[in-house]
Image (cartoon, rainbow, N blue to C red; front, side):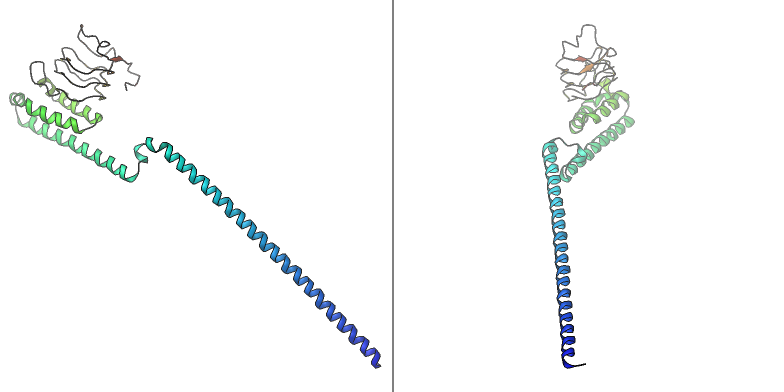
Length: 242
């Protein structure tokens, strides 16, 4: 092969190598550009997702903040904050302890003393009872009144004797079916008390507060007593008193 032919072959090889290198570089750049585009797209997608999550979180936070603000002053006990909940629990425990101590003390006295001695201690019973009623809630007050009725201590509170309940606050207490017959209820606050089925015959009700207390056809009054004039309201047994 002559020298001219060898030079042509060398030129072809150089051209082919150069062309191949140029094509490889071209495709390499294309691939890198595509990767860059994909990476940018992924970043854009991730940024978009993060933005959506951020906005969603902000909306949820705002919703709960508004809800707490609107309903924070009317929350049931189980939704109170820890400090308020602790106060409520402590108060409830205290009231239960007061009621338990009262029942234990009164029961011990009743079992120890004879009926004559019990009547002589009416003033002591009144002081213990009234102090207890000041410390407890309406639900527990019902238990005290039921105890006094069942142990016949309410009979001490007759019209001629010092009243165990004189001037006590029984507002809003469920007193359904309680026998107050011949009891001295002077100055007792019975506003919004449930007196349906209670026996109030011969009870001394002068200065007793009966506004919005409930009665029905089973409540027993003296013939000359007008419950409507006293501010009471008639409520059927199937209805809510207060």
